[in-house]
Image 1 (cartoon, rainbow, N blue to C red):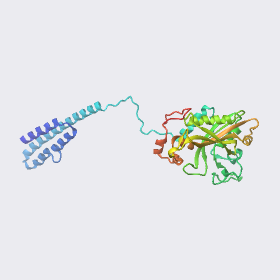
Image 2 (image 1 turned 90 degrees about the vertical axis):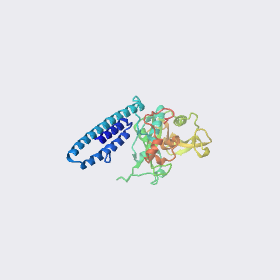
Image 3 (image 1 turned 180 degrees about the horizontal axis):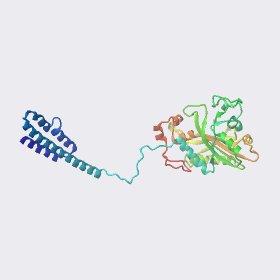
Length: 358
């Protein structure tokens, strides 16, 4: 009994002095564990007489219950102290907005289309759309593209299976068919842009079987080459956010415009890199020209009364130039790491001038 009383005082004193839950657990194991001091006394009961064993067992059970109760009380007190400490040290400002852990990103193609729409929308253009699968008339013939033109050949164009009448539809090779459809369904004046998917049989670092174009069309009685130049110069400077961006027009040839011109912007290639803006070099970014009279005639518009201009550019191309994307193929590889790097926060709002800042 004296040894039990001494053990009781030692254990309860240790419990009262414990400063952490880990220390308290060590005390519990030392007293009540498989090799604990009280457990050892329990094992010695078998050597006692029956009456003595009954009395000693009852006393050990009372001691065990007392120690367990003391440990439980001390544990609750230590937990309360730890919680109070953490509440004091780890304050959270509940007025702050919750940070979104997995915020999505707008794809650069969608972002660039939004920017194009905003800039041309400020100039009075509206957006027109059309089907991806087209008849020969809308994709080639109405655009004054002759039967022997390379664009009509199998290696350049995706054709659908032949129909009963022998004709074959195509996946549109440009968004120009929407211009034809618009001129056939609307009377001038017309001022539209046509962003959308196009398809050509090509695939490398700067070409893709499916890519995006935006084309513009203006038809009225007064528009001339000077209006075309002013429109595209303003667009280039707004899109690349460079007020004095050099822009030049070079004579070229397209079946659906006459005269035709390629549009170049100034750039620098010093040090092996490419920088848009003032410099000693030029970079072609789009094609343009006055709508060919035959195209107007094919759309039942009198070329003696109406005229206008058209232009077109690759959306991936100008996005790569503006945002420093080196390979067109990465636009379609669905790599979330790429999208997090080049994508845009959804809350950004298109600006009429200068596009968007990430």
